[in-house]
Amino acid sequence: MGAGSPLTRPVSFALFGRISRIKSPFYPLLCLILLCALSAGCAQKVVKPNPPHPGFSGAHRAGPVAEQELQAVQANLKVIYFDYDQYTLVPDAQAALQYNAQILQQAPHVRIVAEGHCDERGAAEYNLALGERRARSAVNFLASLGIDPQRISTVSYGSELPADPGHNEAAWAQNRRVYLRAVQ
Image (cartoon, rainbow, N blue to C red):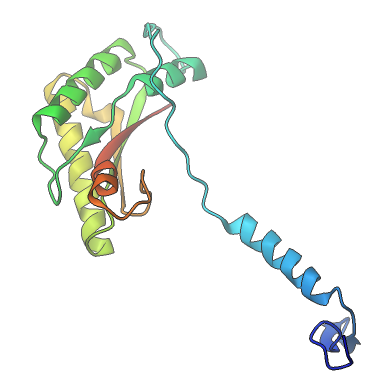
């Protein structure tokens, strides 16, 4: 490594208002470590739902909802899937919502957030609106089954939180959904 080598070139930086020059073979390594540390703190965190769990009893009681009850309800709720560019409920989606209504009737103190999602095709604004229509469609169907709509709020994530990051029909089918999240 000669004097002109990129690893030993002098680098200027400001320290306490003074310009200093560093000539070190460790400068690129230091920059790489700093870049990795900064990018790790900015990475998106993906939260996946828990797998279904067989022994949900749905205890009836007054007062705040216990974390254990929330987890039991969440583990048993089914995801509702939609056809491309649609917010109407197909028979499979209606069956999933009927099942979810039974779970919610057993846990009357649990509140739900209906999260509307879309696949990556379409403009961001369009997908946000479609996700909201999907969430509203699920809430309206649950209300028709006797679930108090005041227990359910909606949010649309559009295509921002894909369940499957793939770029094919199988992935897109998994991303066109309403996910019901149990909250206090």
